[in-house]
Amino acid sequence: MAFRWKNNLTHADVTPEPIWLNRRAVLAGMAGAGALGGSVAAQESLEPNTWEEITTYNNFYEFGTGKSDPADNAGDMVTDGWEITIDGMVDNPGTFSLADLTADMTMEERLYRFRCVEAWSMVIPWNGFELADLLNKAGVQSGATHVAFETAVLPDVMPGVRRRVIEFPYVEGLRLDEAMHPLTIMATGVYDRPLANQSGAPIRLVVPWKYGFKSIKSIVRITLTDEQPKTSWNDINAREYGFYSNVNPEVDHPRWSQASERVIGGGLFAARQDTLMFNGYPEVASLYDGMDLSVEF
Image (tube, rainbow, N blue to C red; front, side, top):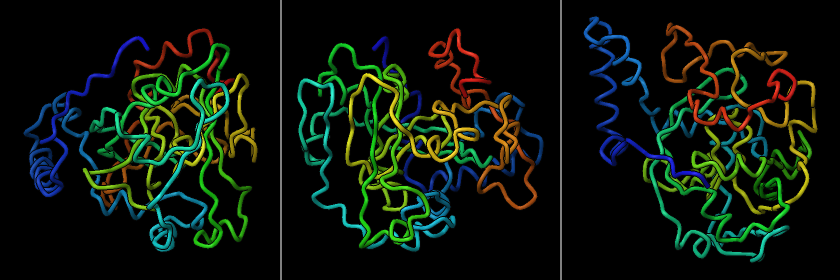
């Protein structure tokens, strides 16, 4: 790992939520009066969405395909005693309790943009740790090139699984250098609260420069491998969903232009905002040097 990502935000920048909400209202008023310059306004505009917005507008097909279905249906999932299997090309494979797995991780707050391929976006104050730290603890073996992830399948409490709206378990994957990048984290909370079930409790992946479906939820297995793993949406429709799925305003999804995005919580008449390359995280660009991102999308 070349470096650790430097978080310029402080604890006070992220919590408690009421302070953020009050600050948001003040900034909205100032912007309306023309009191903020463009660059300052752009920086200050990276404000987190509310807990309610973050937890009531979700894609989590195991609980249904509607945006409110996860919040409505995920309440019966029990995350006490959660275990995660780490296997494949690692020196220390095994099945670990969440408590054991996170015991010696460096927990941080990361305020990240979150961008869905459906062209909507949020800003979310995650709590979690760098995936690289976990992979280093597992001991990645020479020759491993990719990391595969798998979501829980709990048909008794997941109505979407019973309906089989897509093939389950939901699976995702990253190239190893993407997984080891300091921006890539495993999230266990939002706003210093444990993840809500509909947000991917008790632990999920967050890769902020990729579309949200790459950030797989409620993980039960992490596998190191020497081949590109199967990923759910790429497997369902490879023409629409590439393996990489980096946020890219120049490569449209067949059904959704990626040139601009709708900010959740922006209000009914809020203007769409331009999509940023790599969702505004240019430090990852070197991962794709020499690749044609219109082909390897």
